[in-house]
Image 1 (cartoon, rainbow, N blue to C red):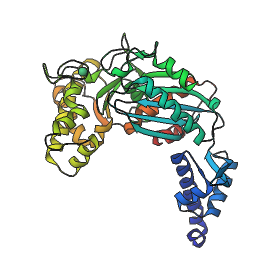
Image 2 (cartoon, rainbow, N blue to C red):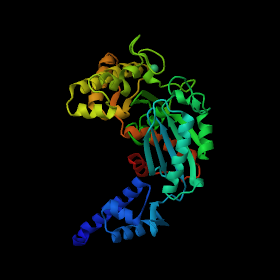
Image 3 (cartoon, protein in one colour):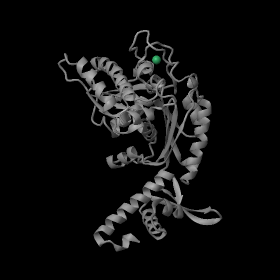
Image 4 (cartoon, protein in one colour):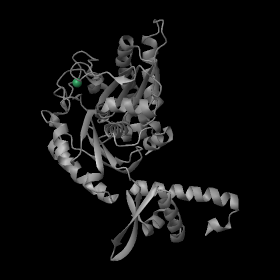
Length: 402
Ligand SMILES: [Zn+2]
């Protein structure tokens, strides 16, 4: 093997790199046999066997015997001796589920699309089966699942665990989300609005670290925001604060899914951007708009910039009321980077130029579209008092990076 020909110094660093490859592969697949690990990492079976043994002894990996194609095999998973938590993000059009250990390190993660008018009871049942499969894939029993955090892309009443405002996510209205999920997942469940959880995740691990008064704006299919006051989410009287996407930006403008006319989301949300480009490009998705814009497509660049300008107007209005220090832009459309952030920043700076205080910084989120999922994992770990306190920053960052 190549590693035997190296000098002793580089052999040590190569061994480090090989350890990293094995841990990453196990995390990505949830669990693998040693033979499968050799296949996906390209390392020799002997190297895999040595490293797995070493990492099992140091408590990083855990092994169990299993049968594969009629043969006995050594099945390898990440160690999770202190139990597991589950984070779930129900967005408008997709679902993310992750199992994480006490240090918020993700041990298994899945993403799948959701139908436009999906029903909450069907989806919670589907998640129940998925979580059971994921627990099995990491060789964990049901009772090792200690708590679940759910992020929902709609205003939530965290006391009742129900949607706080009708019209935003129709298939979820009138459903006791927390109780239904607790019955299905057989673990304590906490629910919150996805933008609040994204704001908390960016505050804990990302672009809002150390920021007390700040705002997180999610620009995905729809638009939402989480407002932090003194480092805590501002929820309002009924839990529907931060419905940034449903501020009226064009009087008598296009109809919004909430039934109102001219909401920011109906003008600048990902679905509106895609809709506006349909005459040019039928069948386009948000990701395609960004790829085309990055390749220099004028119509796509213009559509993203126009969305940014509208978001900027709304952000400037919020900023003059709340005076946030920083506004973080996240969600799918934020992958467009400065093509979206530049126009937002220009409008905010111009609108607030006459104030004495400096305008808020407009920066990209550091956790990407997974921010709400990371926030949901954090919500679950906060509910588990049995977990050892004092998680290190390094460990938290590992969770953020997945
Ligand atoms: Zn609306």
